[in-house]
Structures are given as C-alpha cells and as structure tokens.
Amino acid sequence: MTCKNCIGKPVIQLTNNNVKLCKNHFIKYFEKKVKKTIIKFNLIEKDDKTCVAISGGKDSIAVLNVLSKIKGKDKKFRIEAILIDEGIKDYRDKAMKDAASFCERNNIKLNIFSYKEEFGYTLDEILKKLKIMPCSICGTLRRYLLNKKARELGFTKLATGHNMDDEAQSILMNQLRNNMKVNARLGPINGIKKDSGFVKRIKPLYLMTEKEVASYVFLKGFNVRFAECPYSDVGYRSEVRDLLNNFESKYHGTKDSIVNSFLEILPMLKEKYKEESSLKYCSLCGEPTSKEKCQACVYVKKLTD
Image (cartoon, rainbow, N blue to C red; front, side, top):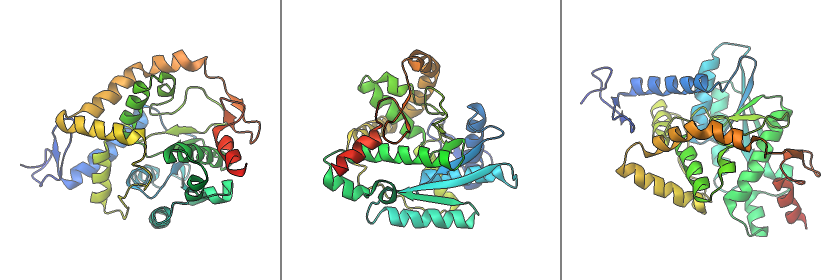
C-alpha cells in the first residue's frame, strides 16, 4: 500500500473515505482543510483580530499553528493566544509550560489569566467547597473569562480547539436531553444573536476528527501532552463520547454524518430560537447573560456565602 498522492508509506487512513496518506501529504491535507473550513464558514474576516483559546493540548496547539501559518508575514493579521489557568494540580502547570514554549518559539503573544486571580479560588479549591459536577462549573467559569478577557483585549474573534468529535458529542447530548435551543448555539460560529458583549467564538477544526488532529500534532513533532484533564471522565459527556466512539469503530463516518446532517438544519434552528433568545446584562458583573445574574456570578456567590 502506498500514499494516494505518491509512492510514500502511508501513516494514516482517513476515516470517512478510507484514503491513505503519507506524512507530508497528510499535513498538507490537514492544513488545507482547516483553511477551507475558515473560508467556507467565513470564520475570519478581513479586519478581524483573532485570539486562540489555548490550553497546551493537541487541539488548541493545532489551531494556533495553522492560524499562525495563515498569518505569515501579514502584519495586518493580528493573532495572539489566551490561556486560562484553572488551578488543577499536576495538570495545568505542565500544560502551561508547553503552551508558553510553543508561543515563544513561534513569536506569539500569550495572555494568561487564572481562576485564583479572578474568582479567588482554584478549581481544585472550588470543588472542595461545592458539590457540583466539575465540567459544569469549570466550563461556565472558563467561557466567562475567555469572553471577558478577549473582549477587553480588543479581539473580535475567539478561536477554540473544538473538533468534529466534540461537536458530534454536543449535538447528541442536547438531542438526548431534548435541548434544541442549546443546539441552536452550536456550529462553526457559536451563538444565536449578535451582541457587543460577546466575542464570536469560532471553530477552525470543526470538520477535523480527533484522530486527525492528534495525528497532525504528532507528525509535526509538537511537544504537547495527550493526557486528559483528571476531571474529564466524570459526567454525561464521557458516556456519550464512549457511545460515539463505539459506533464510529463499527460504522465509519458516524461522527461526520451527525455533524454534516446537523449543519443542514442549523440555519432553521438559529432562526427558530432567535426571537426567544433575549440578552440582558448581569446585575453583579455587567457581563451579557440570559438571566438577571450570570451563572459565573451565581457560582462565585455560593463560594463566598
């Protein structure tokens, strides 16, 4: 067996079409597909100032690398990285070093903010005080800080490392919970309504599988850790992830089918829930929310009560 495009030795077989590619042609395929995704969904426009939410993991490093290659020597294309230190012992500090090292080598400015500085507690400390699902509170606080800091730094787009696997999981989770309004917020560009308080979150890896992202990072030789967050196996998502992985192993292209069929109905979902999505501003912190108080402030108040 040889690479589809040359006589080189294949290093990967693409799940959706069984195409085999060598190292060089796979890297070209990956970067080209991410660029096509950005163009297809108009993720980055001419005057955008883009920051990448980076964790030091494979997905965010892949996004940052491809975007920095697109930027090239174009001084008008502004790109920086933003990292949130949740305060997870023996996990985040190591990933932060990888992220800082990557940004330094590639001359990318890295902005770091922490739960401890912003909320007064690390995630480890929060979970000792509150009996709550780790991913639920961490996701809320992380999204809150990413949006707030990206806006304060003057960015118009916030790129995240969400890949096709992540999106398929979210779609199925919301479907099983009969929560189509939340599904309406998904897609290559998050959200239903535009608001100056929200920085648009974009997903350049939207059409890339987790396997492809991991392969790209490995073949590029990036120093990233593939270890998952110690709290990631707790919760509903981990079960949905295992379910989808099982289906994918038996029926190749399952995740691709879920995401692409979802894209067909997404415009209708956004239109349907557009009028129902009323935005307010939190009475405590002033950040945009759908309630009187944003969920981040609700959690912080519980910590201080």
